[in-house]
Image (cartoon, rainbow, N blue to C red; front, side, top):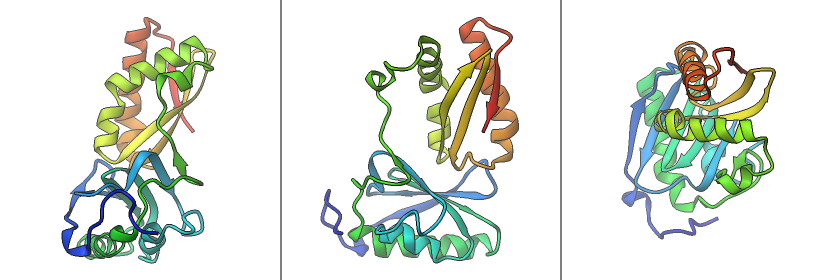
Length: 198
């Protein structure tokens, strides 16, 4: 499926690898988008059926997860390859497959952005938590190739689900989790709030 945003060739694609706080994840920033609306996370080639770019990334035997968000692609891996070799392989796939990738894809693994109007059916508490996270935490997570979703809020416990580079990241499970908890306790004026990852 041809890229429906811009017409370009492999020679036009510029990609740069960056490390993330998660040693198991590498972020790739490109001059063309991977996902126009929302974000998408895949953990297997089967989940990415029909998306040649993502399917090809899973052909690299060290790749365990692919997260797409705007012009950023984050690959999680299992250390089966040297990092330099992995970066070269991922960059080669991006350069050759991005010109035929459709960044407007939807389907399994993809989620659309969550504008405030979509949160109107959620409780007032969850809407407030989402607004706080949008303002304080999400920009940093997204800059590192990750994100989080608020799953529930009951009995002073906020359940969240990490995505992209945040999944399985040691700092997400320790420092970031503590920071989220501290921010929510302060902003909501409730020292009893606990944040738990799923």
